[in-house]
Image 1 (spheres, one colour):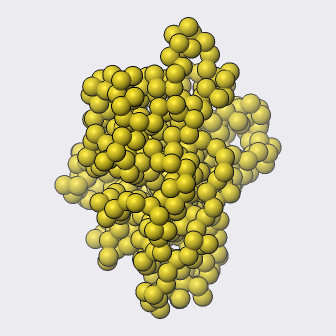
Image 2: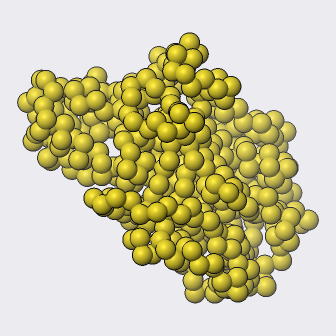
Image 3: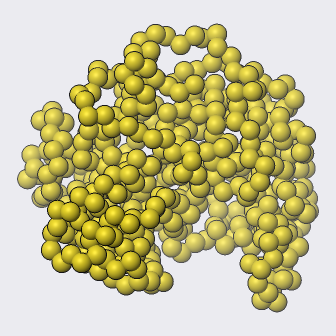
Length: 471
């Protein structure tokens, strides 16, 4: 218990493994409202659901900064804390989507938990949207399981998409999930892909090769030495009718319609895979593929760091003015979202390049003691951040403790300052670019906090969401 009580920022200590991660969404007056029980008779109406975006590809792992909530940091003492628990209700469905949703209950429950009302925007990029995308892909394959089709028709797609969102909202998910994840009902229809039935699909695609490549996605190898991803792309190109374009070395990047067609056909390929695998196996494979994508880019929104540039341009030693300006800027980033350890490396590098191009040449990360986890969402009232692991993560809901998920704190790893003005040689797959060495078991024992769970070096972060749930 001594370890739990100690949450001061001590370099090299793992005693903060259980870190209270409190986020206040509204004022204390609103928080008190949690003491009253939700009305079990509450029923959502279709008008409460977010209107699906009318444009854009289905890239649910990208979220707009516009939906990132602002987390106030009052100067006064924190009011009493109340763990938040999701409000659930029976949704009103359209009645026009001929699907037995109970058969997908396990995947639906996981998605509702990962996209819970107060957390969806904060974990959208890494947890919620990849899981929502996986649910839609599995639903698409499940819909036509007893038929020859791999997609939904436009008319029924609207109703089914709305029903899926309604069911998730009824189980505690954010009803604006389609907006947060840039998803729409047309993602279920196959779009412009010319092949939408199983018979034609299996005539054109080497299905045994595809299934062998994607039935088990290795979380360590797939992102650096992909097997399933190229197999999906190959199948998508084959059913798109653009195989001749690819073999003649023509550039698809210059033909937006061709790119859209291939992307639509990738959705059809996912649908076929989801029909061949058990839903849990398909979900695991799709989530691991999503992890490869989310860890390639930094999801944070960087504004122009003019004050940092002004204060830090000519420093060569620790400067209070420079560090204060840098800390203020990073504090704004910390309010955006939770990111993974690999995303943090990319984010710190991108921000460092911005500063270098503006004339800040000194390693101000080192001078100002900036760590990787400083780029992720911070513990409320503490100087500790949470970096999610690069592997697929889920939000776990418990009736007694509320929400929790696994953080990869790794004891204050220093943020890397870029060595050049180019990231062309930057690769997280190179052996030398693995995450910095973790503390040894001897180091862990010396802290007096040794536990069998620490052998895995994965501290558990209990995430209590405080304040009232947004309606």
